[in-house]
Length: 128
Image (cartoon, rainbow, N blue to C red; front, side, top):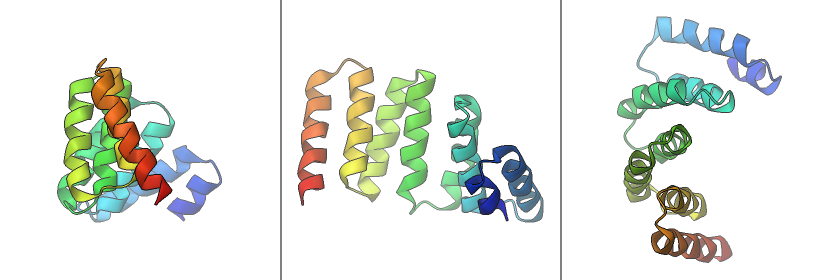
């Protein structure tokens, strides 16, 4: 039901349904992650950060939570945090998107050389 509400572009109702799930089981990565995604889509960076930081310890094998946290941190202006988080995520998953996220974080810091290196890695991985 929650996912259906998200797909129907009814994020408020989806968030309420996810909150009910948390009331039942607060230790569910997917629920906190989905709430982070809803907040990210709403451009509520601080709320997204809070939701992802709650989700991540619940499943340390999921790189996607770290990647999305990095995006939210960059959008909120915490460029150093975005780089650190994306770097941590890359240890779990090295793919096109991961290097693109790290490259954008470096670019936000004005570190063009590091950003270009990440973008080259992303392009190489995408071509494979």
